[in-house]
Length: 568
Ligand code: GLC
Ligand code: CA
Image (cartoon, rainbow, N blue to C red):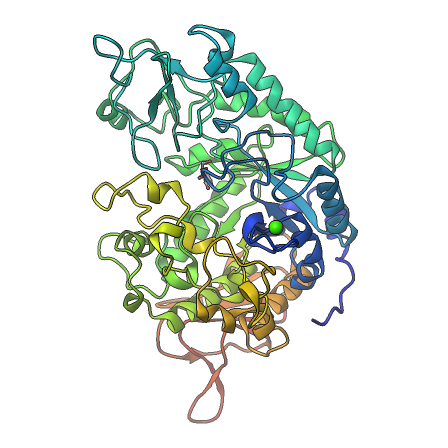
């Protein structure tokens, strides 16, 4: 691997480094395995810091690395202030922070405040304590219905399918919005609030630069004595801050307290909310500077590869960020969704824009439905489009290799509770579940687990990973890895004020073009037919140009190009 860069430019030193950062999500158990037990770990991450540096990202978002039985890939946390012994130690965590900071890369860690795992000390205490005790009040316990309380307090379904209430030995029931192993906290309890402030300080003191807040819209709940039914819940408005479970207005009181903690540090710690809310206005509240400061917008994960959709999404989100004063976020892939190379290789679904990935996992991931080459070609064009936009770009490990979703995982090796908690009949939108985007990364063409480690991989890797490995792409002109490196390098050089101007002259039909300050032009051809390449210095292109009959270079279909032009 060539290592020409030794550290990143000082962008990382400013207080608002996060506003336009390219953030790379590491799903630690699937990134790199340092000790050969088949599970990615902190040693593995440390060993790959040169790779991250060379990739040119500005920050890492680390998915949960806490002690966990992995009932939900680590989002079931046993202890919020420790490292899972299976993947490292606190000392190694410090070493990792130092290694990243040493080359100018920031670190954002996942924080999971909606629930703990059922192995958390507090939940175990709750089980050992009587009904009505303080220990139970930190979670959401209720008596059951029916003559002997043998029925759940309500007929609610968990997000992963199956019931949302589980009975404990003394007959009471507890709420888990996700898996059974993920009991929801009661955020009205002062100890819960205090404990999370302690956790935020614990990691901030260790040098963590920011937090990705899991299920940020779920913490505040208002459950009276009489619980609504599932149907009643569904019928309740979700956009006015009064829904009993989701996106309640008072959740922002919690984040105001968190903000005070973030601001104790220099530079202030940052946060980005995962908030699935009804409207852009509701999302803006999470991005408020008096709250978490930034919120994910997942609109591009739910969009067809289509010029009009993309333009509308960008326009709406830039308008929203102008209102909040936060910067916009862009995401095509993460650990919860079907990889975008695969989504874009599937035919759009009539009347269900952006739902091809969801429908495909629901159908069991049929290989013959994916136009793999076209999907990757579009994904590369989409990413180059994304990296030219103002705001932060959140990239997911493996997308820089052009990885497709892995469908060929035998059922018995699947891990996602969204798969295990349902049957083909009851399966929600998750279908096969999310394991297909969580398969350990291929680093080499051959060898045990394609260089992930020396002891196999905790999810099986398909044979085609060889050609998408780092080794296969490193230094190879035109590879997806080299495209990401080049685009991220140019992005750092070109990045300016957070403004975008649509170029109306070049845009129209399947073509979308915009400029950024300094004469940076991005043009995407979403269609099939080549179009003219505008004048200017060609900086990078997501696919090779094609020649017109007179020999001039054209922008082919499903391709993005960046050019530098004289300032308009
Ligand atoms: C978030 C995470 C997802 C997890 C869930 C429960 O949506 O992104 O992976 O399963 O929260 O913690
Ligand atoms: Ca390991």
